[in-house]
Length: 589
Image (tube, rainbow, N blue to C red):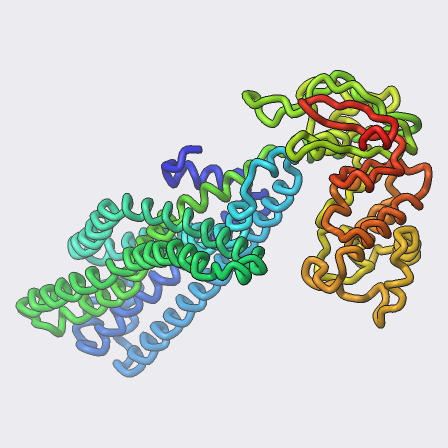
């Protein structure tokens, strides 16, 4: 992916991810920005008559009387005119600022609402990716993009784009109004300001892109170090390696903060230069105007109008520049977010409504099955031709890396064969029926993932709490031979398991995994090294629970300990990319 794309192309790509509702809201915000800019013109325009009446009421009224619309003003007293002008000026200021507050509210709500849309879309698309893609990714990068990078895109790209566009609209309309008032001074003043900002932007854009890359890369490293440090805290404490991880964290954190500081500095710094030049210009202009025949009194309305307009426009110029700097500083993060938003999920999303039912009645057949993880890589499995009958207890053995987990992933259709086919009875397992096939399979891994919630919610994993069938939960727990244990706890099925099941023993976690499979009412259960981390007595107890399950269930057990497989009626040995069927347990010894 090209990391040096121009901002316009990135914003165009982002626009494709917006819903029609969000696009309409965006257009409405731009129209409101135009409306707000006219309120600004009103407040700036009101300063000229206000100062004119204050400093030289007679001269000012004579000037206004030349216009028919204002001719009747001569019949009013100076105090009456001053009161009306003051009131108009105050009302204009109030309306101008109220509109700006409302615009800020709409922009902020839109930005974070859009951020929520993008966050949900990224999460949904990521979950729908094929298993092979998940295997090839670093979880730290995904988590960083979905959290800190997305937050950065919301606050430092989307909101700044809105603010930048509205600021440009307001500046253009204000300058057009001032050109009518005094063309020469307006052109000189704001052309100089624009040139200064342009030059600063020209010299700083490459550095901002470099800092954006640093922020992006070091953010990922920080998440990775944090995950590894907290995830492996037991080994870190035992090995006394706290300093090693602290140094790794520090080596990423320091350049990250320095890059963030530089981006922030570049965004704010021009304001002080512009204020300096603007003040000098106003002083020189005041001096020049005061040399005219009518002196400073005539110059005050002009100066007052320019000072107020500068006070309004200078922050807008600064907003444009700082928002541009913010967007450049988050450009790489935006690219990463766009890559996740543009993930192709056709195989998983579009086919959900095309799922064909597939019924498992007698056998699973593998015909010339082959698989490798990349086009140029070696085959993990090749020319596999075996059958697994319904109701079988199948043991799977092999050395580490021989392809045991790959084999069961192919059965679960998490991986797609690169050669050959898998048949369920006489039906080919393909993209049109794999969703229904997966609904009939339960997987019990070595490390059961348990959410920090109740026993009932972990057994009915992935089911909304309001939809959990407690009777079915209890029945599943009974089949897994853990119901007596749960019901002896004070809170029973409402007992909290702690983070990753920290409050449960290893055997209890595995039985929760079996109960989860029972709740799903699966026809096939795959135990992937499910008892390898247990002591002998606990493993024996869990294996007994497995053996006592419904005889109609087809059970596949991956194990290192051969004793775990002694009750299996078929044992498959995986070696040298092939599978050998062993029908007698005693032949393994």
